[in-house]
Length: 399
Image 1 (cartoon, rainbow, N blue to C red):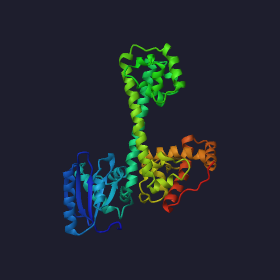
Image 2: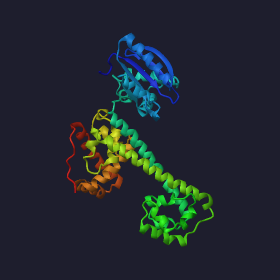
Image 3: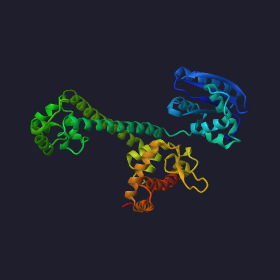
Image 4: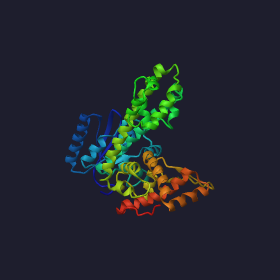
């Protein structure tokens, strides 16, 4: 449908507990304003009122709403399920728009009416057009990958925090115990810590008991037996020891949960067209490909390869002024996708000689490691866009 077409327009100012709704026509006429609760009955009221207007005027429906902080869920997916056109209100550009066209006051109802104004102006004012961004529906497998990979990243970050706390407590309570392993994240070492409720009992475990702990063989058992006569516990072990055991068990639990999520991601990646194409690029394996497929969703969201590069955090904005030559990072970056790109590009340049030479050339120009990785990532964004557009895998030569 062309911009400015005759349609029923709905603007939703999203809140955490309630949403303000304004309904109007493309000629500027305001039909109704109301508020709905963020509950099933509120969503039912929303669609009941919209459908009544749609039948009365026999017009297609376009809905604009904010997606900030995730409060629009699940209303946004319900809107798409009704085959309404959905637009995301870009919060940064909306703030700039409000600076240029301020309202008489600030309220949720006024903000909802602002959305209808944006619909009116988007055909004539480029700034208004950039505030309202069409939302393309992602394939179900990519939508699931998005939620699963975000969950996985949260668990990985939690695992890192618990491990850091665990190592600090071990240094304070039993300094020699951590010395028998290089790092606390070793599976056999975590199982050793979680073996008993009382940490001090580790100093009295028999050789045959140690061998029964999964992952501990004769070599590790010998190292533990060598530590036992010299074992030293501080006075805090009476209460901190239980915390160490609890943290070790939590890390083991997180490892299993992360492994389960990765198995589910692997199954979804096999049916994701975007994911399968990304995995053909050297350096982009299960985790990076799953995260990128989930965060990209569908290529229909992007006007061109430059839009994709900005979204993935691989491009900067021109910030020249007078004689000053410079750039600045974009605020419209998906931080999760950027992190996946940075990891994947770093691995990619180690696999592809041509990419490694490009990276080294950028470093020789004085760029930092991250700047050189982003420069290489900018070229890979062009490769990604062309691959996904043409549905053609990468055929890059590797070592």
